Length: 311
Image (cartoon, helix red, strand yellow):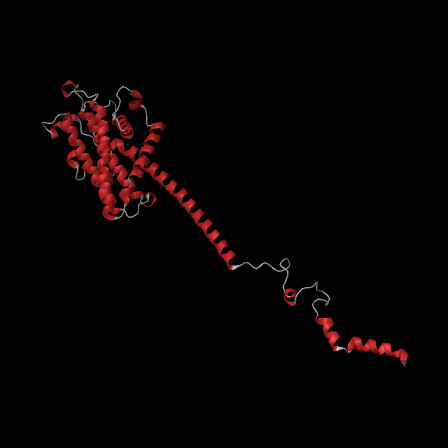
């Protein structure tokens, strides 16, 4: 019996002592699978094994970055498309002005002197400039009142109508100033119209000593210069497209000012080379254009300023 006592003690210690069993299973220091620390520490999941959970702040920042990138792409695309639209509009207007140039009716010196009797060259030039400035002012006011958005691609028809109408009025004025100062370019209607286009583009009188200007066809260099001039005019005319009558007032003032400025530059150049009327040879009457201008351009040319600009 004495030899069996250790066996009973071992069975009692293994399965019967509640305190030791509880200590062996719940002590965080001695229990297997733990490396020490409090019970709270043992409940924390290590960060290197837990799945990443994005915070609300991170998600919002990422969404804002994506939205900003989309807006930036949209702005870039808008700028690119807007630039293409402006270039396309400039090319279209350039072609219309070139096409209309030989069709602009021009009064010769004899007709002008009969319509404005008793006036000398400078007085007659003043009348012509005044009438043309009034006509372009009317065109600017009408287009400005009709427009609603100050963006060139948004109003291509209005811009084209204004620029081609103003160009026809100013080309007519330049041609008649050459008549007044006795400096009619030689050649056909087409050749003279190209010379007047050069004068309009360069804002100076035709140099009769340069036959290449008169006889050459409309080459690439002149087209580039004409397109540059039209582009400048388009951007200069942006205020005309302000909403309602604010745009109308600005368009009228700007067109009148720009036409006068152009006319004074050309007249100043012609005046220094003018030929006196009594020294002029007998020139044949100017032939009439074989094709009429488009209705809108003709209406601009023969509008309220007709007394100074009409044929």
